[in-house]
Image 1: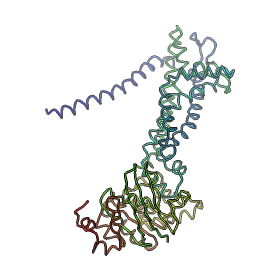
Image 2: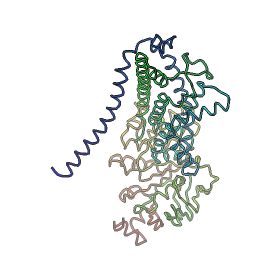
Image 3: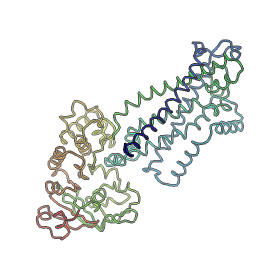
Image 4: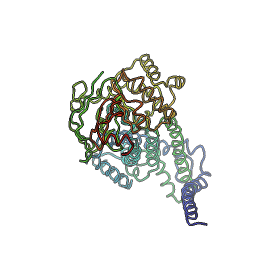
Length: 283
Length: 250
């Protein structure tokens, strides 16, 4: 066998192995969570809030954490989206382009991406102390927005940078303004990528425990107001795993399974939506 | 119909000159082709006419491009109104990421047409003028991305016509097309002259000969020769033009 052919085969195998590692990681996580969690997964788990003695193994469920997590993650994703879109539109060469402000903004996003979420949690907590607020849904949303913002904005930025200059030129040549070009052409062209960016951020947000630990707190009740503490699934996993009771630990895995199912559901729905727009994209 | 005259136009990219002191008049209602070897400034000259050139990084422009006596390079000129008057066909067709109908309606809409029936009429009329109507009339709501490249270029022509421009600019508009589609686009351009002043950049000499009423020959950013097609092709004055037409420079 020639050296070039051997090379070809070797690298193909290496690539396939890497892909298998990715799939294997997900399968492994799923397997552990499901095997340990399914025995505890019943209807009560997703329809009830914890009753008295729940954390000792008595009845109840994690509806408080499910609704709390959904409120936190949806609100933070919307807030991050409202901040990300103007930022990434501004980072286009048509606007700020290569100005110092744009460069610093991009660098800031890169650094923010790397900041551990516990730091956002602590940051949010300090500000809340300063303002005299206590752990609440609002506090959690603010901290999670900070976690999601750099992920969403940077992912969108990469997609928007790939829009061909000629496509924008086609729009400008019709006499459209930068805003019209951005909102009607760039937006339509990048919509599938923008959906992916939103998903990435949402997935990260709903699964994040550290940022909501101090800011959103935890409660056995359903979310009722922005100023009251809320529960969240990652913390439900964390607290239940920390108990010495095997039944409660099982429920931790069940809570994890619910979290995974939520992320999967949101992904599938968004992908279906994105596919509808994908057919318009110019290649 | 608007009259384009270019006076002492200099364009440079990052201090590298692309056009040197170009002065030329473009005849109204005819097809002017800009020819010359790659990198001689053909596209730069074309894009100076609708100021798309400004989107390029590090570009510096001096001189005047007068349209009906008004210097359009003046920053006070409303560039959206200017571009509305100058339709553009690019090298590779770039339909917009929307339906066939919305592509043609894009221009009229941004310039304020909201009446549905009027839009319908404009879309049909422009698609007919670009001889695309028969092929797409049953699927106006389909994404433009599904059309073949040849159809896409005719869609781009229809889109350009929809804002009722006075000038059509073509930047090698057939270079990405198969010979048949290229022929269709050429035919449309010949039909449209008279109503429009048409400027086409091409690197295909045969195409230039088929289309041109008037020829501008650029070489390394300089205007070497320009004049009626018959004269430039039949009896060129300059040595460099002769050499280019004979295929000795490319």
